[in-house]
Image 1 (tube, rainbow, N blue to C red):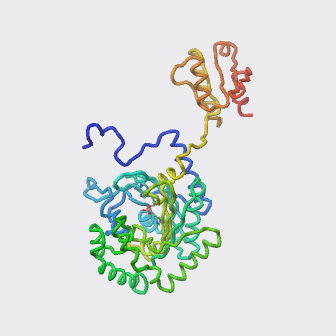
Image 2: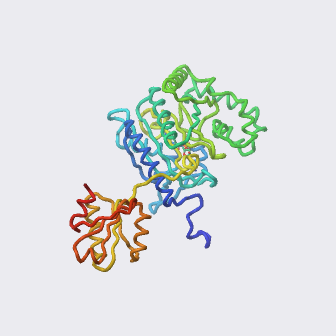
Image 3: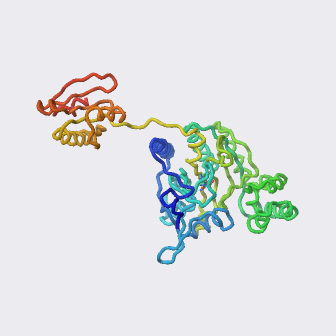
Amino acid sequence: MADRDDAFRAPKGTNDILPPASWWWEQARRSAEDLFATAGFAPVETPMFEHTEVFERGVGQGTEVVTKQMYTFKDLGGRSLTLRPEGTAPVVRAALESNLHRGALPVKLYYASWMFRQERPQKGRYRQFFQVGIETIGSDLPVADAEVVWLGAHFIRSMGVEPTVHLNSIGHPDDSCRGGYMTALVAYLEAHQNELAAEDRDRVTTNPLRTFDSKEPKTIEVMGNAPLITDHLCDDCRVHFDAVKGALTAVGVSFEMAPRLVRGLDYYTRTAFEYTAGGLGAQNAIGGGGRYDGLAEALGGPSVPGIGFALGIDRIRIAAGEPEVAHPNVDVYVVALGDEASQRSFELVTRLRAAGVGADLDLMGRGMKGQMKDADRSGARWAVILGEDEIAQGTATIRDLSTGEQRTVAYDEVEVELTT
Ligand code: HAM
């Protein structure tokens, strides 16, 4: 049970998004969705929770996300379910389940969704956070990778943040490539096991690649001299990576080579990338992604390649300096005095709204002065005033709130006056 004092507060690591900040969120989500749609991606929604196996098999048993951060619970039927910590495994699960991979390829999908990870909360790191993401399923061409990296960078820039793009290739798991590299890495880690931070020593046997993700200074120092995957890529992966870099350079995306970037999720193959920004302290990754050519198979499907990213909107907002944005206002505020006028004002507002005119009215029973203040505060261009005189004469007064100019029109003509 929550502490008594905490019971009626938002749970630790979650945020309420209230106006005016909520307008920024709305706009960020919409502009991401518009951008992705105009690049040929279609919206996808998956359930907020999945069978736990989707993440165990998809994201990987040895990852921090699966071992430490998942909100896992049993439902009344005794099934183990997990609130999604990320969107890629669910989207691929859904695509396979509905046989999208057997139809026209590639399948290009985008999502804008809440994710859940039980992490230690700090600035930019929350237990419920919002991601916008895209997934291109079915193409293994380098241009698909470049398209994804470009779109993420372009969106981040459009939100007023200049990202640094960190790029790596982590090859594929066969012995000719990452498999061979793992032998070299494990040999190196075993030779330096005592110099690693105590909490990282187990990783040498459980998931050696994850030692690159460690935030422990001792481990980071050891990893500084570790063999690098990029020196062990097979010819195919090297050619693929060179083509991705070439395509990005050709469209003016500058990137930094990041040979120690392995990303925290096990499904990655070949291209792996991250976007970072200043102003965030330790949580400076505002987005990341990569290729996951083995994920469909890990989820019981055939071999289908894929690439995508997810961007952390909470972090982009902090990096952007938490700006306020312009938002839609009502066009007309109806000011009414007296019972009959109040009834009429509701009728007028419904008529205006039905005609596509944004309209609002007094719901607090305020007097004339108070309602005029509310009209100003609403951001409306016009106030339509219904006083006793207007009611008696079957008229309404239209006031331009920016100039103060007024004119009286027939009550039945208000809509026409305001829409032409
Ligand atoms: P990820 O790197 O785990 O990748 O998350 C992507 C982004 O989500 C991070 O760069 C960060 O901005 C944001 N994020 C992650 N955890 C938190 C948190 N606790 N609080 C606030 N923001 C957070 C994925 O999720 C992959 N599914 C990306 C992907 C798509 N790969 C291929 N396709």
